[in-house]
Length: 376
Ligand SMILES: Cc1ncc(COP(=O)(O)O)c(C=O)c1O
Image (cartoon, rainbow, N blue to C red):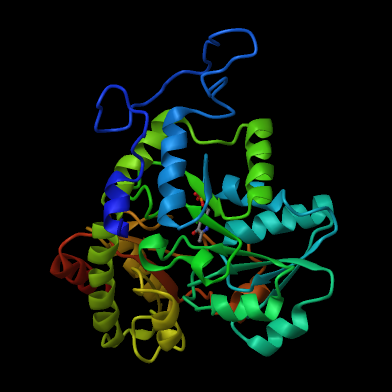
């Protein structure tokens, strides 16, 4: 099945007895046993639930992985994956990352002595220098949040070697445009709150892997701490995923139009979008992704212009998220990246003049005209 068909049919239950076309919400906390020592396959919903299981089947197929796990949020997925590392392990991470990931790594550094070194993971030499003989994992976000830097996943696999666990956050591109497991990653992570559920109404997260040992440990963590996704949110995510391929393509068209339009605006100094030919990751993106996605960041001429845009958008919403049907504008400085230390934020280019746009699926001209009014 091609990926568009998987989006629509991939959650189907092979043992469906009722003919229900939509996967039902199994709103049951516990399951009766047919006999002593016997099980229907379900015992208690913290461990597994049929609706969550259908969603996990679907996301694993989309990422072309053996096993998928659905969590209550992207951060819950990330925390579970970090649970595969041991206290005092070393990890190398992309320097430009979602601020919540940096916060989690800082907490783990304090609590477990996890040593996280940040570097430009797309710079072969820097990456080589940063890797140490006892580095256990490399964590890559590509394109990165919010500077849209692209990392060559195949190159990281080659430089890090087979012993290092390569974890890729694929939130920005989705499996419709990029499948990191096929490029050498061991684990793919998603904030499913974004494109996968897609309607700004559900929090969820995913981890997908081909490695049975990782999958077993992740299942043990979910069973133990109870961070698996609820039945109703699993249902909403399945529903959202049915149209993922359509939404991401439509949003990408809007992103390309907005990037080209912003590039010409006198108050816009720089546009970061891998779809633009001048973007440093443009050619690389073409070799590892089938699209450029629908996220853009751009620098305006002054902090006052940034504030003006945030306060004057009407159709576009000033809100902290991405990947939904609605176009959102975010101010990374005070929202997504507020917890990143100032010195590091500035070195990355996350200034008081940087705005991030997540293009939705509205009419292109309506979006451009809202941007025009807001920029003035
Ligand atoms: C790239 C990326 N990864 C992970 C997360 C965390 O996901 P969640 O908000 O679903 O916990 C986010 C949230 O914005 C994100 O942008």
